[in-house]
Length: 199
Image 1 (cartoon, rainbow, N blue to C red):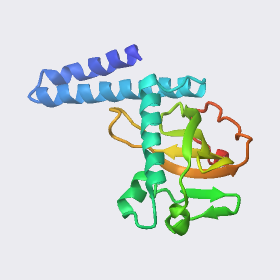
Image 2 (image 1 turned 135 degrees about the horizontal axis):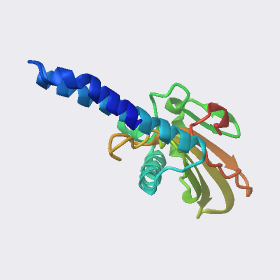
Image 3 (image 1 turned 135 degrees about the vertical axis):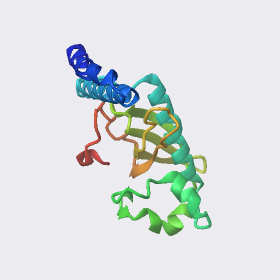
């Protein structure tokens, strides 16, 4: 890497002496910057595939942002404005989904399901992709008025904080509701999201 930078700087040195000094310097900076960025991306990809998790900052952001999306979902009703639906679901994803034991329902057609009593949700597991662009979590659902009822909300989130932890926001990509006392299998660590692993 450093040898390549030296070669690029050396090739451009002759340009610095002519009338195009400013352009030559800008060109050097651009080329070197691009090379450094590619090297960094390659190193990050290698680390991701080797199982290196996302940073604590990214995980904390994903957890907070994902919970906000789930809270928005919990607040939905048939009277909710479209903006609340957009805060909950990744509507631009063609495969965004909601399902329960009766099958998959388009999220824009949830209708009266949104007016049913909302459970209290307790997070039980949460994992963020090594690339920081998706996350998977499980919440235990319980109802004060139905003490014997238990469900599990298994959620895939998409979005990602990108570089400044503000540029992206996680939204629900897939939400699956499983009834019963048995918790779905805890999501394993992963680098990039695999559509085959959707709930």
